[in-house]
Image (cartoon, rainbow, N blue to C red; front, side):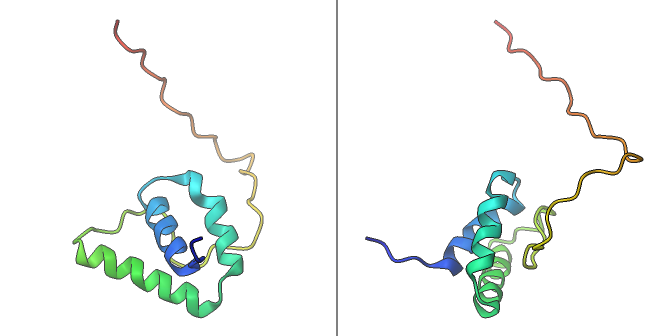
Length: 92
């Protein structure tokens, strides 16, 4: 089998999250719970080095610190909910 490498796994999940794949968020948080602070720092350093080497600007997606262990909060009733734009139908 293949050995587990949390640093590499978190590296790839962070890149995916930063570039818009929000579906990896839960798995990324689960991995963070298993990682030491040193592993987390190594993984995030690799992300930054990869982006620098590829000349990729910050995607503005994921924060580059360890995910919060707090449960997600519900939107405030004072804040309007964001709506998705309507889906376009494919032309036949």
